[in-house]
Image (cartoon, rainbow, N blue to C red; front, side, top):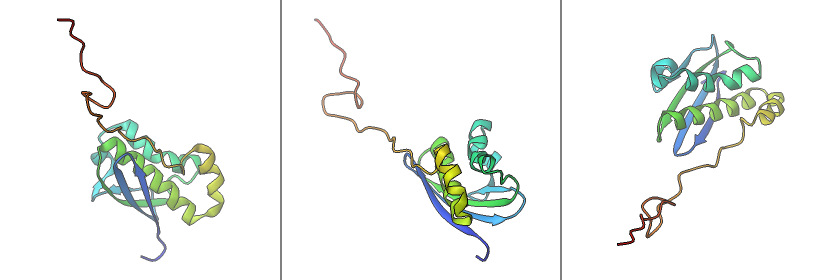
Length: 129
């Protein structure tokens, strides 16, 4: 695709493939508008943050495919992907996005369940009798 910039973003168990095109600020995720896909204003504003920080609101259309995880993880993955695609578009935006923490992949994932526990750290309830 000519004039587009591609990047992938990750968060928890979600991955987002992101394409940026010059446009009017439309965001399409898995063929649906962002409002319809996320259904939460907080997640929608989270996705918009990289554009607000770099003062590029309304300059790009975003086409993305998100897989895995839940909608919060997908929003984080999309934000990460958009940030990386903006750097692919203009390398001078790197310092601004890096300072905001948008280029760092959030490494927090759910800890595995351990033997003898009910969850990762939740032990069995003690019974005296």
